[in-house]
Length: 189
Image 1 (spheres, helix red, strand yellow):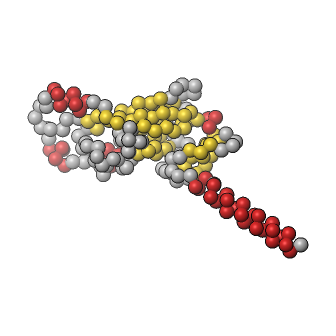
Image 2: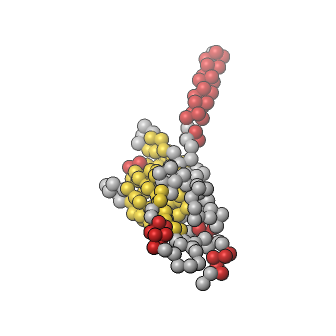
């Protein structure tokens, strides 16, 4: 009888150890893992909690983020420079923030999305109007952005709408004006 109880304890301990290794905690931030019951586990780095997101209530969205900048010099710029600044450049290796407009921030309504070297990523989102912004995790090689400026990081740069049945491919444009935290910019007329 003692051997049976000991065997049961060993089996329970092994099963608990395996659960810890393969449970939601082992999934890295912003990663998706399909579970057998058609749910997706999402670890949201804004909230830090892991919970199931029903894939039937979300849409797979493909995101491409680009940026352009304003001219911040004093003299009138040449037209060639203005054309160069207006070009859309991939917002590479940067984390952006997505938030379902009109909701309280939570795991299904607020996401931090890591962009690759082409400024692309994908995520499952609920239907509705989403706002997009930045985080302070901005690629250092991108010029014209001050990641330490709270005004730049907290600004909402635009919106997009996720609809059921649509292709849900979004091209997000971030337009960076002159650095609002630069004291020299405030002195210019």
